[in-house]
Image (cartoon, helix red, strand yellow):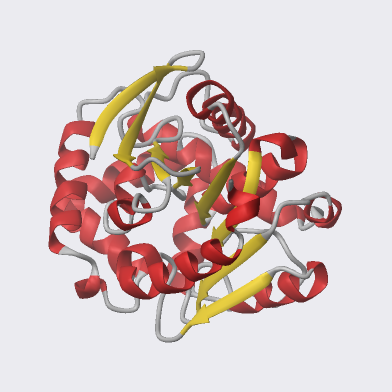
Amino acid sequence: MLSKHADLEGPVHYLDFGGGGPPLVCVHGLSGSALNWMAVGPTLARRHRVLALDLRGFGGTPMGSGTRLRDNRRVLDRFLRDVVGAPAVVIGNSMGGLLAVLQAAAAPETVSSLVLVDPALPWQGHRPFDVRLWTFFGSLLPPLVGEATIAWGTRRLGVDGAVHQVLAAVCVDSARVPKDMVQALVEQEVERLAVPRRHRALAQASRSLLWALGRRGLTRTYGRVTAPVLVVHGDSDRLVPVAFSLAIGRRFGWRVEVLHDVGHVPMMEVPADFLRVTLGWLESHEPAAA
């Protein structure tokens, strides 16, 4: 796993897991980073050339001009064109799944196939009410208040506590996340404490994503996706209801694989199960991926 940078209207950090097959690009979700893929990247690299980028304001990529969805969709587009240079399998988790769909719809020549992992795709339907989650995300909406909320939480919990709190929110059992990944996430967060506007980046990205989820008007966008699509979704996801992925899959003919007793980040919580369903599907779609 090599750490690299590309100049895409500003520096963009990414991890290169190696491999010599068709290109595969991993896109993390809100508050995540390229490290989210370290448990599955090496195995994916046995059949693909695997790269995982840090979106603007996350991991090792500075905020730059902004961290809104449109800013990071442009980063993904430039990354696929300038760094990858060929149609790629794009695997996106949560917000990264939404970005992957937007990219495939707007620039189909850059995407050979899609794997959407608990994707944050707007859809009409009932969303369970979780008091703690709704309170937290609601606090991010007002400018300045959102930044202050994130900064206060980090000071109160400490870096180690903040990382474990996030993992507890996105996993059914955070103890299943590999220990080396948890340690890498803590070390990354320690480094990011010195990054200017760090809290502003997350708050801005959160507001942009919440605005998109509130629209629920992307049905035409989903219909423009011509690449083959696999959706992998944990049935115990507290952030994105599995019913949304099942409904979208039925509507557009996308295959949906549901993982039992799994939360929002299957590639971190149950990497072996994630690899089993993903590699099996990719193998059957290898002509498209190539």
